[in-house]
Image (cartoon, rainbow, N blue to C red; front, side, top):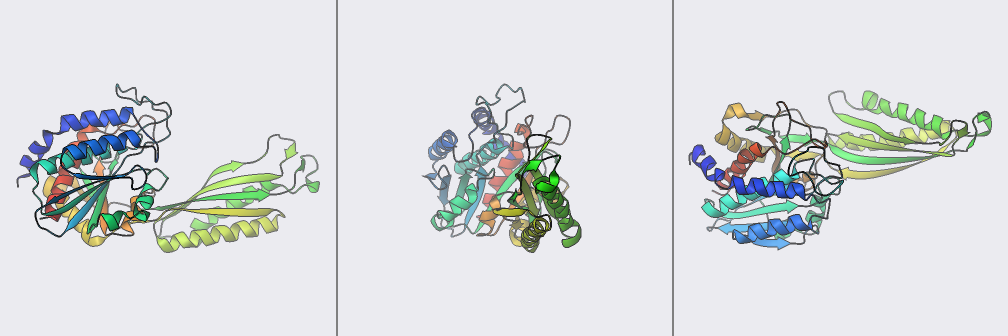
Length: 390
């Protein structure tokens, strides 16, 4: 089919879907609290003829549509949750719930997939099974893992899975695809240091956890600099250092919190081991005790080569090669779609959200999903489903 015709078809559903996006933006819900959003998604999918299944991951929704006799199946995922951020956009459809905001564009992801869902249901130019996965709790709570653990792919088999994220660094009307590791793992570490408190004027009677903490912070910087291959990527960031209440008191304890990221599974394992080793050695050398609570977060997101190449071909067919980036640099942010990609082949891609004046990075109080990006995203999902299930 002609791409102009597809765009014209998509354009007929966009006004309603943009209004729906604004409604979701006004009523953001945090991880595993997406009850109203799930109700809205389920109601729309049902009205368009999808089999709607609820409850996976608590507030997750899966819409299934079968057509023809084809045996192939595809999964397309959108996330629904918001962030605990006070909105500062001043938009007429700004959040009506204080301290909650769609600051990452999940409202746009959901509305974009719904726009594609409506178009696909109307045209039905595919042969097989389409599974639309509306996932809760992407923002740090692991909604994807919970859906997988509760039987997502056993109940809704998918030969391949796909998802996207808007990118404020890219112009509207563009797409980007990267094969292999595309987003980093993200682990959290809490280090509790126990020393002995005392008077600031008599430090020899105390055992200072602040000095030990400072030494640990500096020693941790050597991991990326001296233990990780210079051609690999890793991050060890100390984001919290808490200790003390007065300048003349040596406190008895200190607390550090770390964000640890890698683009390689072996490097991820190395970071864990070196952090444990360094904390133990520094604590012993300075006469304190230290406990490391290492919390595994999201794994490295790895796009499979065949599915990424296919996804990129569809993008090029839709937009032309000049609007498609192939293998841009990986991103050290993380994404729990990685859990789904550990179980099924697929591709996580990027949709241009605008890079000009007024554009704003995600997780910012001034951010808003760009409605102009929805046409490209919805047309892409529709064409992807048609081509995969041809």
